[in-house]
Length: 120
Image 1 (cartoon, rainbow, N blue to C red):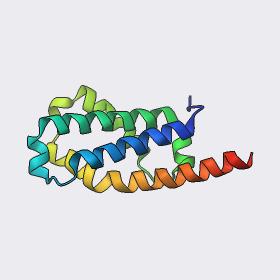
Image 2 (cartoon, rainbow, N blue to C red):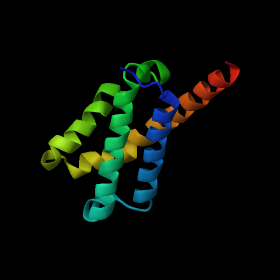
Image 3 (cartoon, helix red, strand yellow):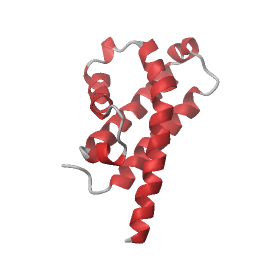
């Protein structure tokens, strides 16, 4: 069942994406892989993003079309259950390549949603 709080779920995605960007600022992939505390923090934030996407359910696609929501939701399960098979370089790619545009489109969707709510 989709969340009754879609704005809050979008905020969760944005806040966790921004936290990840702060955690890895100034790092390269090698430094990221060696910094266990930041690596663990990034994993946890990605789990939260995945959970927020799961709570949005099908609403995610209508609020923020064009995103790989199935894969975003699946990432949380992989991080929790297949943690020993996660490739550090792939996680770094997600953080560097996939996350910034996701954050940007979620920010746009949140602005649209708030504008609609203000009119209602």
